Amino acid sequence: MKYLYFSAGWCGPCRTLGPIMNQVSSEVPVQKIDVDSESEIAIKYNVRNIPTVILMNGTDEVKRFVGVQTKDTYLNAVK
Image 1 (tube, helix red, strand yellow):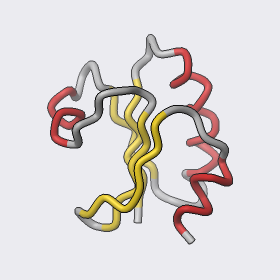
Image 2 (cartoon, rainbow, N blue to C red; image 1 turned 30 degrees about the vertical axis):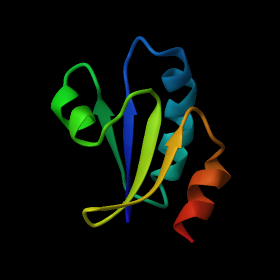
Image 3 (cartoon, rainbow, N blue to C red; image 1 turned 60 degrees about the vertical axis):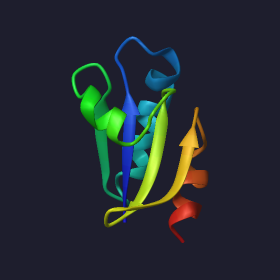
Image 4 (cartoon, rainbow, N blue to C red; image 1 turned 90 degrees about the horizontal axis):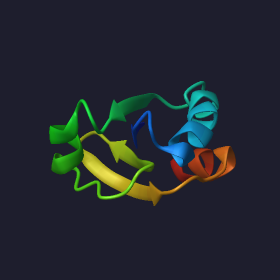
């Protein structure tokens, strides 16, 4: 499993979530996607708000989080 983390440099909540996702990445792989430079990926996953974090199992979406959540919320979703 891995997380897709959709964000943008100008997004305040994304800057808050960044350090949390860095902590999560020590236990679960996290792929950060900048919606400005990689908009085609955001469109593919139907990301309408940022930050959005999607838990993936292979090519299947398992769970989606919109907005800032706690580190434990992300880690507990993997269990």
